[in-house]
Amino acid sequence: MNGLGQHRSGTSGQRSGEAGAATMKVFVDARWTRTDQHDGISRFGASLIEALHHLHPVTMLIHDERQLRLLPSGVPHVKVNSPFSPRELWLSRTLNRLGADVVFSPMQVIGGFRRDYRLVLTLHDLIYYRHPKPPGFLPLPVRIAWRLYHKAFWPQRVMLNRADAVVTVSGTTRKLIEEHRLTRRSVTVVHNAPSPPSEDAENGDPGVDSGAEPGGPRELVYMGSFMPYKNVETLIAGMALLPGHRLHLVSRIAAAREAELRAQLPPDSDVVFWQGISESDYQALLGRASALVTASRDEGFGLPIIEAMNAGTPVVCSDLEIFHEVTGGHARFFDPGSSKDFAAAVRAVEDPRTRADLIAAARGQAAKFTWANSAERLLELMRDLVR
Image 1 (cartoon, rainbow, N blue to C red):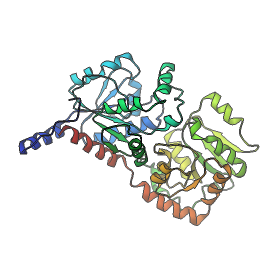
Image 2: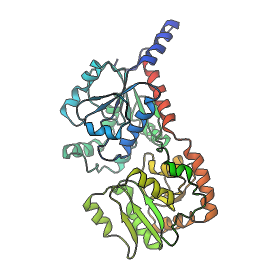
Image 3: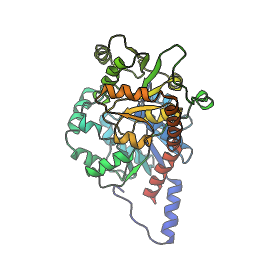
């Protein structure tokens, strides 16, 4: 069963295929879930599990009990090895014993050979081929392997072609996968989606509010990592041209990277390093913000953007193809290499009429992205594989 399923013919074959799809045992690799606070991959996996759980029985794979704090309750789980353990090579034996019919991974890596189940892998983006520096939280041997892995496309092709199907989070990334011929397998778009808005956000009406507290600064919010391709430097430089504004950098940041960015702060600029933020504080900050801002030079989706649109907060972002796809054009775009262009875009969304029109159109666009819709698309793909 390592390849694509055999085609059945005749009515009895169709009935057996439908029965198999109805009773299939689905496992989701939740071992990429963080133990403290979600990152993009962690939230993607946990949110899909939550939505899938309401459509079809699901079993989660974890490697640390603390991961359950960020995973939906009431979903069965099995504790197995860490994905970084040498025992990963034999993970398929465990899944075979558990009777897995389909295994979905929110990453493109999962170990094991001689599997008896269908495998669906996820490739979120191709960012690290253009920016090969690995995330700092990974162990040193993994960081070395990561960098080598992204020096050529052939390892990615080998990895993806091991699967029966591939998932990605945007049409833009699917097009890049096809352009680079990264897989012979079908590629299905399963979008990211925003978390449900808080009760305050649902009951509130940002309308044409400027995002400023009376007598206070206009709030700008950046949510994301501080890796070089995220280009936070342009946001910081732009603060020299935005007196009366405060930039909130809400994600956690390594001490060395924070010192590096603090050294670039323009005189008298108002920049707050939050070092991580709770979901309730984040929603509250978005609710009063003048804009969600990002100067990223590359993205696979841009989840904070859709979260801001869903919350009724205008988006000011880099002029990237993926951001045009996600926002539907309902944002203010700027050249990520120009702090002057960034500042002009921020000021543009503070015009009351522009702001009101942008919020209304962006909310309509954001409504197209839901975890329920994404889960339905993923479940349909998995059912097709076992028919």
